[in-house]
Image 1 (cartoon, rainbow, N blue to C red):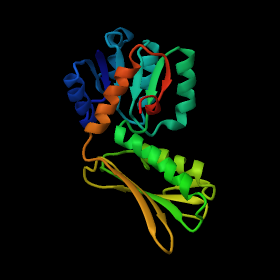
Image 2 (image 1 turned 30 degrees about the vertical axis):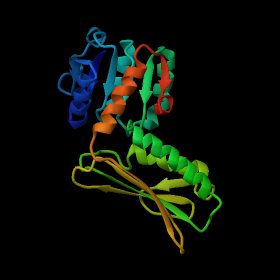
Image 3 (image 1 turned 135 degrees about the vertical axis):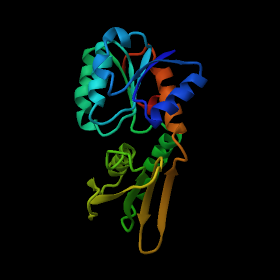
Length: 235
């Protein structure tokens, strides 16, 4: 499979290494220095694109892929306020889009544990729920896309919580503490606290390999497909 890789930072390099180990070829490296020179003909050399750039450039890159008829796997977060627009455009152009706030198989299993625990805790009103997420200092969006997904899952199950905030907690607000330090790949902790005890679940990434592997697996899945897909279609 031929892959067009948008973004060639630490994550892009991990994706390239894993893709090559799985027998794929990176036919395009697209970065800020050459993106404006990119043509539809260039993109047509690839079977699928993998996009890990920034919240400010991701939607333009997605649209470039749609225009070229190239299915695209998107790992960038911080753009989901524009998701409906991109989804509608994908359908209009009969394109292929695979999106996820986190491509790690472990994280997606953690999502399911989070949903189940939240459903159990809904009737125990003595417990307050909060979250802490820790990432490297280079991460631009706060909170992380993964944290937002986890929070939304909790809000769907816990009737007493109506929203989330990174600023302050409240009776109806789930507080998310966001920490940026060192080169931490990603840690997410969901905590239920009462006067009697605490219950915690945690996912801690040791490196970026899990995210990169998941993105390549998603690209293998998306090749030749049309429509909108998520990790639920794989896990």
